Length: 102
Image 1 (cartoon, one colour):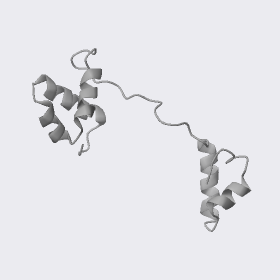
Image 2 (cartoon, rainbow, N blue to C red):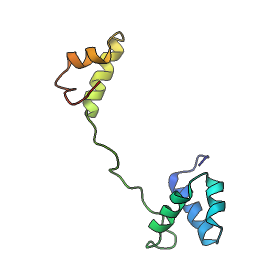
Image 3 (cartoon, rainbow, N blue to C red):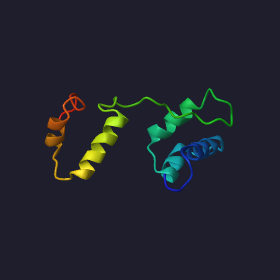
Image 4 (tube, rainbow, N blue to C red):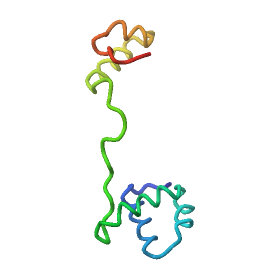
């Protein structure tokens, strides 16, 4: 989906096209998305009011191995010493990177 509009705008456009009885195949071509993606959006919008757009689901994906604070600390250290390898950084800070594999 190209353009500078938000995801909600894109979803709303797809839902509007569906209400105008534009075939799913045409919507897929217009938006450059797979049929399954469009169908999932339409099925999640079924129980909502006519002008509502389904919200984004949060929490997908695996959990972080490091905290944002640890990332910031490591980024600063690597910027100060660019010659360090990933293994060097892990050996310098085993407590921060104990669950991270290289």
